[in-house]
Amino acid sequence: MVSFLSLATSSFYETLITAVWIVLPVFFVMLFWRLRLQHKRMQFLAKVEWQLVEIRIPEKNDKGLKSMEQVFASLWGMYSFGIKPMDKYLDGKVDLWMSFEMVGRGGASSFYVRTPGQFRHLLESSLYAQFPDVEIISVPDYIEELPAALPNETYDLMGFSYGLIKPNAYPIRTYDFFEQSTRMAASRDAGPSFLDPLSPVFEAMSKLKDDEMIWIQLLISPTGPATGDDIKKEGEAEIKKIMDESTPKKDGVPSGIPVLSTGKRDVIAAIERKISKQVFQTTLRFLYIDKKDSFSPLNISAVSGSLQQFNTQNMNGFRPIFFTAHGGWMAKIFPWYKKSKVLAKKQMMYNYYTSRRFGISNRLADEKLSVLNTEELATIFHFPTAVVKAPRIQHIDSRRGGAPVNLPVE
Image (cartoon, rainbow, N blue to C red; front, side, top):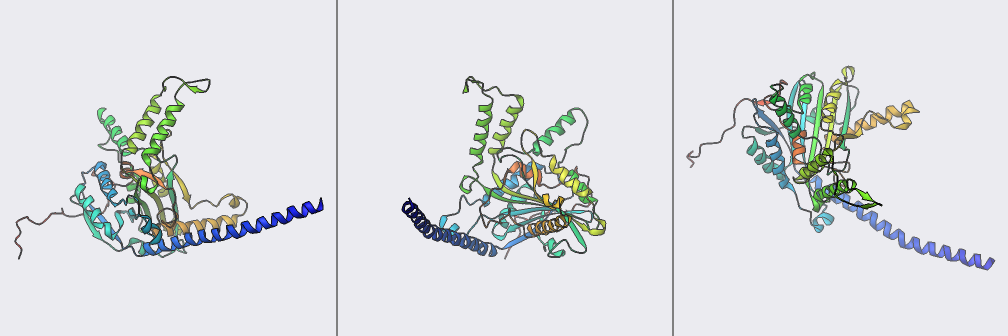
């Protein structure tokens, strides 16, 4: 019996040692490959020439949100259709992105886009095609007007990063809903000419003091099956799930045709509408910055409330996936922990915004992000139309025109 236990113990240790000698080299090779890939991606991103442009719109902008949707549809031309393995794994090449930003400060509203230099022409041509009278100019980065790290002794901030509540195939409420509401109101001889879903945001920006700032950032990168987001397949799977749940069953076996309520029909139609358009991986952030002695949460509610307009119970909506005013369960026990935790979150959110960080990893690692189509993007980011009454939006004073076609040249 003793010899048997001794033999079993000896065999166990020999097997364990053999397994360690096999597993450890594999582990270190995988770790080295992962770290090397991240390093290569950092090198690739460090070489990207980023440019910040300001977009100034005519004082009477008569272009609707459909025009902005066409801009995003054109920007899908950035799509790589999948980076070649040699470029991806040896050179660290990743899909790039653009950052669309709405900035309110001292009662004025401005619009910016940060783009890789190689896509600036695509951005300009897409905007001019839909908004011929806009002015697009290179500007210094407004972020550099503030310290590199916040909060500090002078300024405080609060911020949110948003993601979708349900799977990506489910759409948020889009501008089409608001246009339909407007038409219904008009049929009753009441209501404005268009219910702009961002009106509360522009209104809040117009009332900011000189040191108050509202920053909204929407980062987008085209995606599709080749980059891991087969929205058509996901949507069809969700539709099948709804149909299966609505099919009568006999002894646990589907029997008969699906019995769909009006709500489920609407959901299926909305999913089909979403998956029929180009889609983008997205990151949505919001920051409110002000001096500590005058910090007010009222403007935070205005922006976060506007985003809630896009939420529906039966489809999709936004929820905060990272926010600064929470310290976790330990904060309930240790007040000092909450203070340090909230400070660290504020610093992180500020860093993510100012570096225009895409997602959490900034493309250094693969991650699942919220996917929105062109219609949803245009709902979240668009220029105010003439019906928006918020003052001090940055306009251009004159119309943009081209040179005469018969201009003589030497």
